[in-house]
Image (cartoon, rainbow, N blue to C red; front, side, top):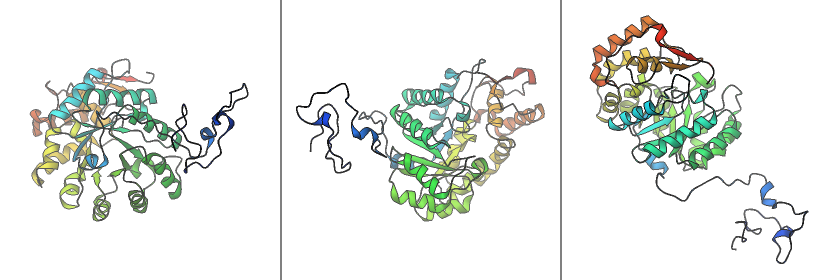
Length: 366
C-alpha cells in the first residue's frame, strides 16, 4: 500500500499493525486537539537518518578488505581547539604512505576528551576533505547506548564509511545487555567492534561476536586486543580481525590470519607499517620497530604518540589534560630511536628534538 501523502507512513504497514488515527482518515479536518501520529510512539520504531547520495558510500566488504588503518592523532592549537591544518597534513601523510583507513576520534585521537559536537564535526571534516581517498571510520561508540545511537546516526549522516563501537565500560553490563547495545547500532551501517578489556574492564566473549556476525551483515569485524589466540579463534570462524596491539600485529597478520592492524605506530612511520602489513613476513623489520612500539606504550596511549609528534614538529606541543608529555629522559630516548630507525621513515621534515618541559602547553579548559 502506498505511503500516506504528507506522512511517509502507511497505517496498515504489516510491520506496524495499528489502526489509522482520525487525522489520517479521508475528509477529516485537523482540529486544535489533533495528536501526533501513533507511529511516533510505537516502541522500537526507529528510522535512522540516511542519505541516498553515493559520493562516499561504502559497503561492509570494502571495510573488511582494509589492511592498514591508522588511529589518527588529533592535534591542537594553543587554546585547545583543533588544529585542522596540522590534522589535514597528518591525514595526507597517511594517504601518501598507503594507509587505507583512519579511525577518527578514537582513543588515540582523544575522542574521550571531545564534545560530541567536536567529534561529529571532525568526522564530517575528514569525510569532506579525504573521503574519496581513504576510508573514514568514526569512533561513535559510548558506554551509553542512547549516545552511541545518536552519535552513530550523525556520523553516517555526515558521510563516515563505518563506525567503531566499544562495549559499555565503567558501568559494565551483562552479556545480554552487551548484545542489545551492539544490536541497537549495527543496523545503521558497516561496523567494527573494538575489544580492549584493559580499558573497558570487560572482555567481549567470542560468542557475542559470533552471534552478531550471524545476525547482521553490517559487522565488518573486530579490533582485538586480547591476543593472537583470540585472533586465530575468530579467523577460523571466518570473522575479519584487525590486531589492536602494534607489537603483535606482524605475527597476527602472517601467522594467525588477521586481515591487518588498527595502528598507533603508523602515525609516526606509516610507510614501514604498510610494509609490515602488505609485503609478507618480515621479522627483521618487525624487530626493528618493536622498541619504538614499546616506547609508545610505556604510558597509556596517546601520551607517547602526542609527545613524539611534538618532537617531530608535525603537531604543536599542546596537551589536553589529563594527558601530559613523557619526561625529558624519555624524550631523549625517542630522539635516539628516530636516529637508529632513520629520520626519513618518520612523518614530518624538521629535525627531531627532545623539547624542554617549558615548551609544552597543558590545557584543562578548552
